[in-house]
Length: 314
Image 1 (cartoon, rainbow, N blue to C red):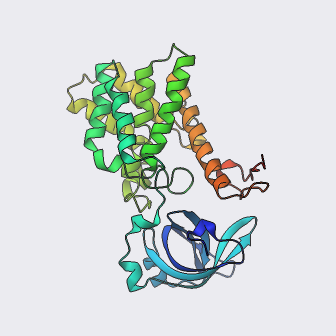
Image 2: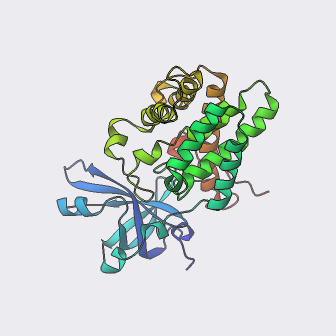
């Protein structure tokens, strides 16, 4: 049997260890509690239902826990799912590092660091450059290991930095087409837009939302921290660049119904939102196509309106 959960087909039996990436409690129509589990290893993830759970199960089977299990791969509404036969937290599972069961960015951490450092180095606006550089220095370790999301896109080790670098490459290409853009502002917006995820998640391997993540969210957290960093650097409180950077962060989701605190009111903010959307969606589709045979359709993807994408034979 090929190794890695994404290499198992419907009808196969899986026996081994997986990481709980996400666990949410549900209740059946009869009132019985269960857990929706998203389980993963270094190749990808798969969902499972853990039925008839106890309060003790709910307390123990949480995000970031490694579990040992036996299950059958089934088809559930067009998507692969694990039908659990056994699941438990064994002594062997407790000894296994959670990071070993998470996907990693396809680019080395050194390459990600180099591209971000060089982008900041070439910024001409001293205020924008110093604020952006301060965040890299402040969260030098966390930024390069955290995922960009809990489940949908770039949900892997170093996903946040990889998402940032791929967005930078898109932004640099578009800047050649639209020379009227403020490159420093756009590139800083790309680098800083999701930095608040470091505060929103518990850790790089546990994407449970923290207290601040639940009560505030990564967008307001980051907007406030930009102001704090500017104050620490002695930048005037009325400096326009600070406000512009805050606006880029506050508006990068585009619409209030998508979690944006403001709609984009700068051309760089509008483009940042589009670039973010492009990279998130393409990462989602590309990952699904990797696990799909030519001539077949991907599993349905919730973030893409439950569409299934076809993988051509040619």
